[in-house]
Image (tube, rainbow, N blue to C red; front, top):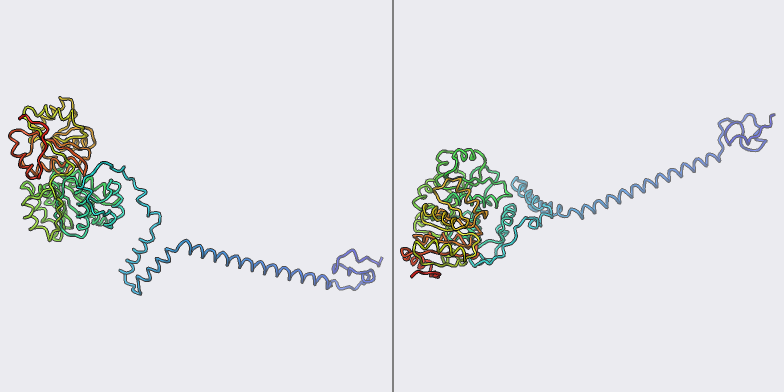
Length: 512
C-alpha cells in the first residue's frame, strides 16, 4: 500500500517527486518543492517573451519613423508655394513689424495663394461668338494693346470679355490709361468707335464698392442714351458689387428719391433731373470723384449748359472730368478753360465721317420722296434702317405712309410719353421692327449694331447734325449706307456738308 507510483503526478505537484519508485516512497517530501528543470523552462520562456516584445517595439518605432519621414517629404512636394510665400514674407518684413508692412505682406501672400486653377479663368467665360464681319481702320488701327495691359480687376475683365470686347479700340487705348491716372480728358473720336466703353471701364475700375456713396456721375443729353449707357455699365460690371442707377426726366421723381436711399455707386442721367435731385438734398455728390460728359458738345448747348455748370458746383474741387464727343464747337473751349485742370487732349478725327459708310444722294421733288423711299426699300438689303425727319408731325405722317406701303415701321420723337418711348426703343433694339422713323432725338449715341442703312428723308440744317445722323450706321468699323433725299431747297446745305467732310456724295437719282 505504501508503494505508491510517482508517475501519477507531474513534477513538483502532489506527493510524488516525479522520479523512480524509491524517491516516490518518501513520506516527508517538501510540498513547495519545484524542480530546477521547470524553473529553467520558465526563465527561458520569460526571456523569449521579453525579446519578442522588445523586437516588436523596435519595429513599431522604425515604422513610425518611416511614416513621419514620408509625411515630411509629401508636405515638401505638395506645398512649395507656402515656403516661398513665408520666405517672401520674411524678406518683405526685413525686421520691421509695423502694421502697414504686415498688411502689405498679408495681401501679397493672399494674392499668391490663389488656386492654380484660377489661371485659366478666361477659358471658363461665356464669350459670345466672334464678329467676323469686315472692320475698317476706324477701330482696327490700334497699338496692339490688350485689356490685361491696364491691370484692371479680374471681375471687370470678365465682364469686358463676356460683353464681346476682344481688344481695345483706338479711343480706348488712348483714354483708359490716362483716365486711370486721374487726369482730366477732352477726347474727340468718331461715332461708333467705342467711346462709351472708353469712359465706363475706368469709371468701374476706380469705384470702391465698399464705400456706399455716389463716386461717378455720367451725364448724357437724352433719356434713351441714359438707358443705353447704364445698361453697358451694368453688363461690364456684372461681376462687381457696384450699384448703377439711371435717372432721367419724364420718370417718377418719387421712385428716384426712394432709390437714392439705397446704395448707389454710379449714377447715369440727364443734367436736369440730377440737378433737381441734388438741390433737394437727396443726391449727395460731395464724394463724387469723377464726372463724365458724353456727347459733351450737346451738353454744352444753351439747352443744357446752365444745368451742367450748376451741377458741377455740387462736386468736390478735386473731381476728375472726362469729356467725350465726335464734334467740339467753340463753346467747349470756354468750358474747358474754366472747369478742367490741365486736360489731356485726344483727337482721333483725321476725317469727320466713318470710313465704312458710303454716302449717296437722290435729287428729288418733295412729292417724289415717298416713291423714292419705296424704291429704296425694294432695292436695298436692309437689316434695320433709321429714317430721319425734321419735325414731329412729319415723323408721324411718314410712319403711317410706310405702314400703308406694307413695311413694318415704328416711330419715336420727344413729345411721346416716356413709357412709349422706352417700349419703342427696346423693341427696335431687339429686332421687333425693321424700320424706325424719328427726329434728331435719336442722333446722339444710340448704338444698334443691326442698323446698316440711314436715310435722311429730310436733310439736316447743319453739318454736325448730319455727322451724328449717319453715325447710327456702320457701328464699330462695320460697313453702312447713308442715303439723302435732297430737294431744291436743300442744295446749299448739301454743298456745305460735302465741303465740311472733304468728300462729295454720289448721286443715285436726279430729276434735273
